Length: 68
Image (cartoon, rainbow, N blue to C red; front, side, top):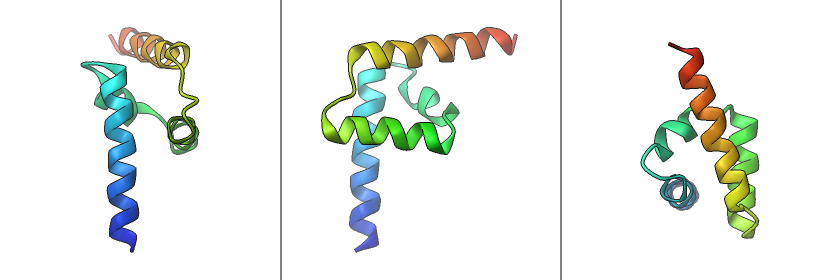
């Protein structure tokens, strides 16, 4: 049973990463657990908008620049 849940979660993460683009997986890895759970819920409910995805991309870009 738990394997099914993990598989579904991996599928949700894959959907989100694909929608984020080439840096999708690295963007997801940078999110804290609460933020990731919020994004997962939005994706599952069909409420993850392009605007939210763009915000995530922007936050990731700022983090990358800050690390330089």
